[in-house]
Structure formats: structure tokens, C-alpha cells
Length: 90
Image (cartoon, rainbow, N blue to C red):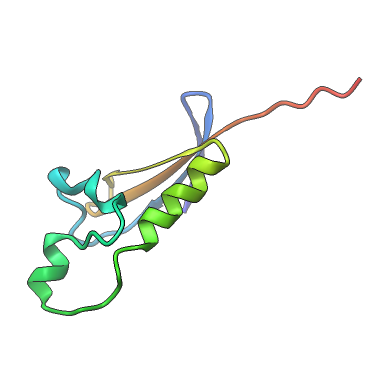
């Protein structure tokens, strides 16, 4: 996990070195009950397809964004972007 500042927001980057998420599935992985092609190809019925949908709901509820992209390490990068809030005390 890496924390950086991107586009004026706090970015939490979680990378893996697995097969990644194909570009055509990158929005679908956040839909409830979606299980990607790789899950079906393995023939293993692990997971319900709710984890990423619930994660995105939580991140959106606190003003952030969750997305998936290609990792520099070759697999998937899941990135949470959160606004940086500067409090001013009078």
C-alpha cells in the first residue's frame, strides 16, 4: 500500500502482481454480484461479488472515489482518492 498526493487528493494505492483486471471489466467489478471472467475460468465459487461494490459505496459516502487500473507491478491497482480538507480554527 502506498499513500501519495494526486490531483490535490490523498491517494491510497493498493497494488498486486496478479493477472490484473481487464479494461473491459474495470467498471463492472464494482457492480454487486459481478464476478469476472477469471473467477469463472477457475471454476471456483469463492466470493459473492459484493466486496468491491460495498467498498466503493463506503468510499463514495465519505466523499472519495474508488477505481481500478493497471499496476506498475503488472497486476491491478485499486486506488482510493480522498479530498484533503484543511481545517481553519478561529
